[in-house]
Length: 387
Image (cartoon, rainbow, N blue to C red; front, side, top):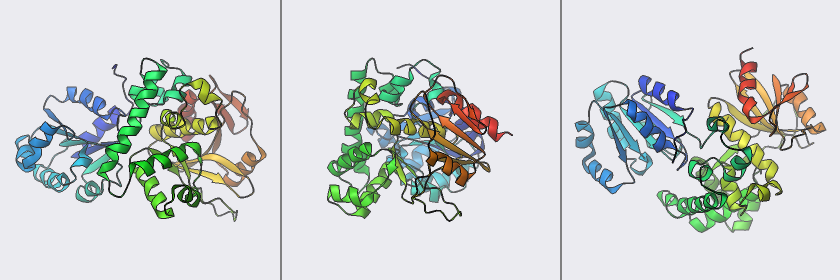
């Protein structure tokens, strides 16, 4: 499979230079191993261990002896969440060896789920998150239609045709449910699949734990725990409600988006862009694409949504470096704004408003409001940040 350079590479290299340990986290099959193997070409004194390989696991049967024997090398450990007992040892070695660029860890679980690392390596570790392909990383070599329907996972997007891509995504879903899920206690594949499919149908809507629990025949707490696991393994994004002191009656339940448009399409049984474009979920999938790209490009930003009980709403409120941007997503080439949108803008008073649309080139809609393409969104936000 061809190699496509990733935006995060230099950030990982810089983090290694300044920290003893770097954890590159992100969903399975998002390209972490491919990226790191490419990076290790610049580190001739390095070793790569994959904890899903029995031979590499065997090397760590006496982990202290083996890792000590590799002193002086950059030690890369893939799927580190499978061996959490390593973290106290890594802390000891980091303190003993006393330099940076010691360990590069890869994991398909979030920082919060890797509690051992955050506790044992506090002050010694930097976290970097790799998403599946960002639109900007593809350099114009792929169509937005294929990015919609196939999603951004490398093996799905780069597949030879739509059918191969769809089959890969079905296999990915099955593997996650039937193998990867077994690392975490208290979850059953059948219930998780049903929940995942329900979330695909209500993608981008505020989550109703009671309705989901009733449909699944489980408790509200169980549904929340399942969604927390999907979030912690990068399968969904939970967007909290924006809080204000305006005295407005706000919707408080969070919105939940699946983390990849191709996985959403597979869970909905949609095999092509043509079938996806006519589906009721099309607008929410565009929101999902915009959100994932923004979070990948601006990892330091916080994202919320705004909605009042009176109908004022905006898809995303982005807080970054004391700037506030309102971002409304319109999955049409001729976007327009509703009265509810304008009311929300008055409530929030953002520094600027962007209308993200799947257009080739954007335009100024009116003062303080720009229509932008997915290509232009980052540039326009950075322009406003630097003013």
